[in-house]
Image 1 (cartoon, rainbow, N blue to C red):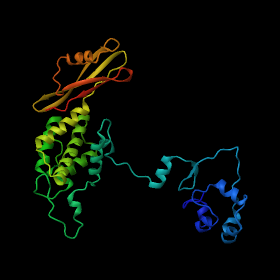
Image 2: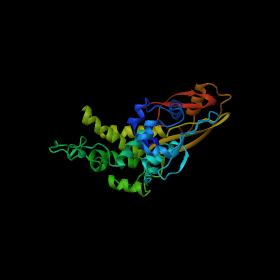
Image 3: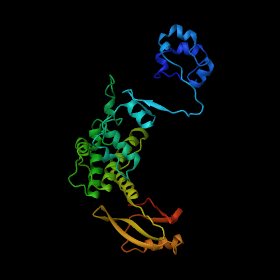
Image 4: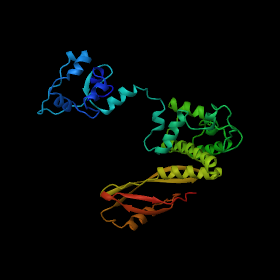
Length: 318
């Protein structure tokens, strides 16, 4: 009934409201029944604006409606969307949103890129507001100050990782400086293929994680191990197999390794799931595909509801 932004708060101070034994949990019905359908006399003596306001009439035959009054004064049905927009304001959508929040993304990777695009990763250069900052060096190369531009990818360590992943995903000629990369994302010139988008986000995430490991855990990995992590994440995300009901059409992603590049190829296989009720048989049928130079170790298959089969793979990809 009484809330700071409600209409009653403009007529009756909360001190007067609470002096009658009411609280923030008091409803309009509780107030009307407690006062006999009229404003209390001591309120009328102090709050002159109440003289022109009628108390609400109770009608038990009609249900309550939750309404929302916009900043423009219009009254309508309450919705979380409208309330959020009115309270937070109408914010413009950034141009790089679709480049970051694409279908098939890895959420934690996309979130990290989103924070980086805003320039809000907690890099050490943001500690320079202190009067006497310590000698802060990049944990990856120990040569220059830690910053967004240095980590992505002015640092020799991260640059080696990024150049290798660029060759893997055929991102020839793509930017190697964070400012250029962010500008490309803003103007829609980012990676076009899903595996390329995943590779960019996974590279930023794995480099940031390696930086934190060295800074906080005193653990370090070589560039080859970080590259392996990026490859593994992208391959596992892109590798999937889906079986339709009945005569199932299976779309299998196969990753070939050629000159340290991985490409995506599609093969279609029809399996009669009504006859292949043995997981081992299905596994055998899939492995008998030629060619089958998959980098992954196929460990097991599990059948779910509606004859859908999921794939579990090993982690020793390279």
